[in-house]
Image: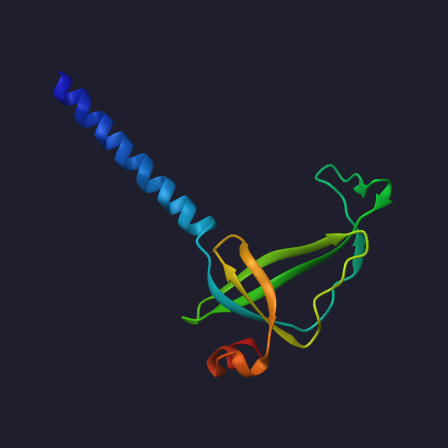
Length: 128
């Protein structure tokens, strides 16, 4: 009986470990990817999940909400949302390349501007 319970516990631990790793991999394990920003979205007042305006020390926050399509070094595409939210936010620069670490669900690091000369040609072709 103890052997059976031990085997069941070990199997359950293995399943939890595999599921946990898959979640971490798809959410937090970012891979290097590039994007090209062509337009600036409308600057809007920042709102929370209930629709109420968000302020900081009585000052209204504003946001730029982007939907960025990144191309990874292996050629795969991933589209993720990105928000810049501050009292006076500065948008991403139009007609510029950006690099970042991107998972399947979010931008893990970045985006940071990068010179066009440092972007691989196959990535440039895919982004245009």
